[in-house]
Amino acid sequence: MDGETRQPARTRSRSVLARGLSLLDAFTSGEPELTLAEIAARTGLPKPTAHRLLGDLVEWGAIERSGPGHYRLATKLFRLGQLVPVHRVLREAALPHLERLHEVSRENVHLAVADSVYTLFVEKVTGRDAMPLRSRVGSRLLSHCTATGKVFLAWGGRDRFHRLVTAGLPRLTPRTIVLPGLLHQDLTRTVERGVGISYEEAEAGVAAVAAPVHGRSGRVVAALSVTGRAQTLDLDRFGQAVRVAATAMSTALGDGV
Image (cartoon, rainbow, N blue to C red; front, side):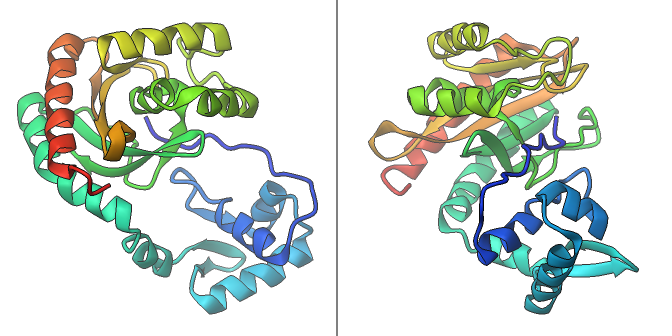
């Protein structure tokens, strides 16, 4: 359920800062180590420019050399990520509910937030009895193929839906919804039943059900999900469980987020 769907690099003129930041965006959870050539290809930058900017980022501490001609993200980015106040508050509020969901389901349980047209996983609770997944904290997927992503789309208004459609709806499995009209119908059903469902749409053999967490003024600030084997995951039962947990978390947050 994880991996990361990549969007093509923009070709318009960018500032030095924007080009430097694009180097960071070249890395994914599935490919945490890249060569100079790979980074240049993914960012659309000439190799000399990419090499110079990489040197600046290495000096600053955002990237480190993992071998001759190889680079990976450095721990300074992780430290900075822990300082994001909203994510920290959400993770602290979610942890007891995630743990209870795991006790009930014995499956993988996630906390996710919206990240532009993506769903970003910011916490995960799992165990030895849960189905092995590639998902990890910090990984993200386009929203159309995940249960948490459908939550953000269903309650996120027309703008988020249109931005996603413009970005593209790539097919990850034979069950991935790639037609905007069908996706819109699925999101309508998501609101009606109160949960987002993904059945082998992001990864073959994997299903998930997610519910929205509401913050200030009723807006959706996060989503809780249970993910497991498509053939055995009880979507009705765990759908009710994630709704209860998400409601309890919303109450605990109050007007704090």
